[in-house]
Length: 445
Image (cartoon, rainbow, N blue to C red; front, side, top):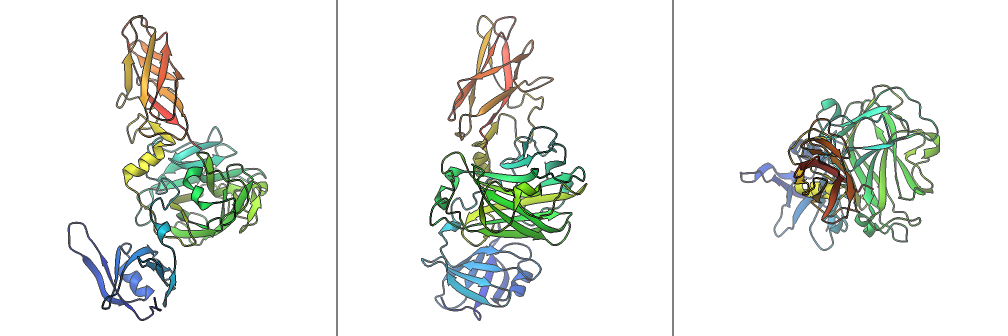
């Protein structure tokens, strides 16, 4: 395809319940003009004018501040890509097959699914990690330094998104040398096996996301392997406080090291909100060792009340960031349920006292044994850890509710595919007592 600097483009967007809505006709390929026409949303269809010309479809349109790049991909065997630098368009061949299928290897990158917390704030007062929303894992080495929540602060998400995850610093804490505080995204090895990391020909990947913080400056992150002995630290800049900004980072695949290609952890993406010197390193190259950030990066936990919000997280094959890979809600939920599932209804936090969605069964004739069968909605990554919760007052983990009160339960017969059993012993003072519970099943990385 020849240089397209002077080519006219007809840009149209199909509207629901209406004929094609045309934003402009025969618009010269000028970025400022396109920004003005498409400030309400992405280009969904682009037709190139001229007799016999091929139809082009928009693969990526990033708008804002007059400095964004626009990329159009022609559906052809050569995969011609048109790229605007804000003044002119250039054309080059590129493979477009990577833009289809499971393009985004991050699950729930738009932070929509929150099976555990139902949007409630999550405490970091115990343990070493928690899930803010499904597949978004929060790591910390010191407790109570920040809180995290879906849609923390109730700010307006960037265009095209309805949810985000927000971390808020609880104090001004100076990270010790081994301290690390990260928003993490673990990816199963089976979902990145095609990247071929750990051998010659390892594929390049591009990370993209929307970020907003009350702080400005250079921020850090990293990708690493399951063994914790290979890391690539990177930086990005937040220029304006309390403003959503779009970031992209391209990383050449690692040709050495051990990278799982099975149902163990394959690639781990970390966005640091505070890291000590021994887990920080020079950005921009693969290194041996476990690192989660770049040396000198801004520490969110270092400023009391500082905020860090993230959404639209994507890791994809190739050297160019493309539009966010929206999947149907049911598909995204099923992908999350491979790692965590529950009987609680959507929007109900774990441990809530409720009978809605409960499972149950009667005791045997002697009144001293009951098995409650559990069916998983999808095959889980491995046989999960199962916790039962009573459905009456004082619902806590490891219990079922009987007519005469809550009973201690144990788990047996767990598998990864279809069912397991919650077994309870000495559950009743009489025969035929009804036992009920809610449950969670976790097979997280």
